[in-house]
Image (cartoon, rainbow, N blue to C red):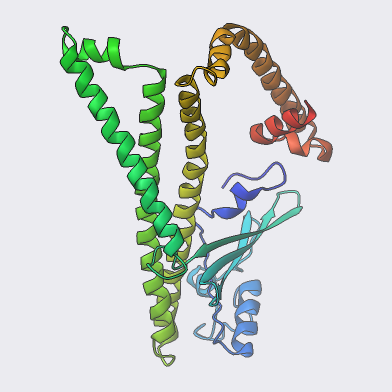
Length: 329
């Protein structure tokens, strides 16, 4: 894992790719075992080794030859994760306390909370309004798709040239491209929603299995079930993040379709016609403006990496630099 050069943000704290040392502390463990496990993780089972080392509570420590502490000089990141369940709202929250350890000794910290509804896709009374509006949205989407197909067939039948030439000359245009982009993004939203619903259904099964399983199970078997549950929670959080990102992009295409409706009405078309006539001027203004923003972003970022000062922290990444430049402007 690459060492962080600046303060961590949400993108750094949400994901933990390929963790190397995982230790589980269960809430049903007694306090003596929890304390003993933490001590073994700290000293590498030095106190409990004995003759065979069978009393060591740190699985990773005892698997090393010779046994070593869980936290070493090469450790770059530590995450303490826990899941809480709000039964009243059906809400699961994955809380991660992240610590990044720099080579110089500085420890950066960040707490990330990712919440998800475990029953959002179930046909319950609480979800009934969302289901109704989703059905109306699907009908509108189907209406747009059918109208576009009818327009394509009409353009091909009424043209004397071949079909591809008829589409290129009589059908393909800015607003039709906007329509197909909105349909394509809507299909992606539907695919991601079904993926999220599938992962949420798997998570429900894992949660129900944890609640109904026998408390007298061996700890090793219990750990396997808990690990599967946490993997399901992380999978749902990842799918929900992707779904929300695409869903945030979809309203922008709907705004473009709104401009299409402007163009269909003469008085409202003044807006779109003005933008069309001023497109060259907007291009001439936008090009140097974009170059200025890019240069203003790159210069502080370079200075931040050279000086490593706290004052330049917000310009340490390209995304933060752009937001900083827009705020200044």
